[in-house]
Length: 259
Ligand SMILES: Nc1ncnc2c1ncn2[C@@H]1O[C@H](COP(=O)(O)OP(=O)(O)O)[C@@H](O)[C@H]1O
Ligand SMILES: [Mg+2]
Image (cartoon, rainbow, N blue to C red; front, side, top):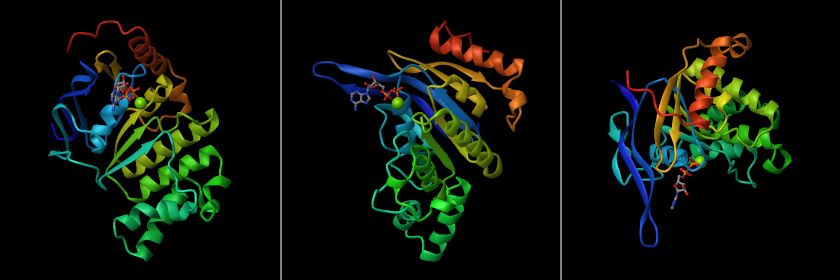
């Protein structure tokens, strides 16, 4: 299989005083180019740890993580990471925050300006390009953080509960924006959420994890077409898949035997 992201028998343990804690125990997962995969699972099951390894922010204890067939050894501009906690520089404007990564990457000023402008427009922040973060709502700050990741134009988006702290309306708006962007530009997305509805709405596949030790419990295909219209969201098929995911998250019945 031609994988964009490949987790191969990944184990991650953290040393404790006189023992060690296994956060992930033998996770294998292949994500194809242009695929949109969401991950749900109980708190502490290792979702952030998994994403952190694809981002190159953490190393597996054993096993391998590959992006484009190459072992991940650190962060890179091919992967954009978006966390729940928007980390904006408070003294920089929206535009300057969005340009920051491009500046680091040595992108010339005119090109920086063009790419930042495009990313800011994508998330609907045009009118606030010159605003400082403290004058923005939480949802707008998160849009700014998303624009910053988009501006670098990464092939892979790694999103760790990016909409988790937002109000319901902003969350829906950003979901629709993300899906629209993804449909147009077709990046590979690995998206963590604790919201089962969000997981099903966005994904082509939902990975359900289990805790103690963290592992993949079940992978549920979301056989629904894009664009995910309201009609789809309200359909019996959607409800059925949502219920399957819900049950595997909250009841963690034994996984179905492999097909
Ligand atoms: N640096 C660390 N040292 C020790 N334990 C850690 C560390 N990072 C994460 N853990 C533990 O690993 C488990 C998985 O963490 P995490 O990936 O953040 O879970 P999730 O994102 O699914 O809530 C948790 O039990 C957490 O306490
Ligand atoms: Mg987490």
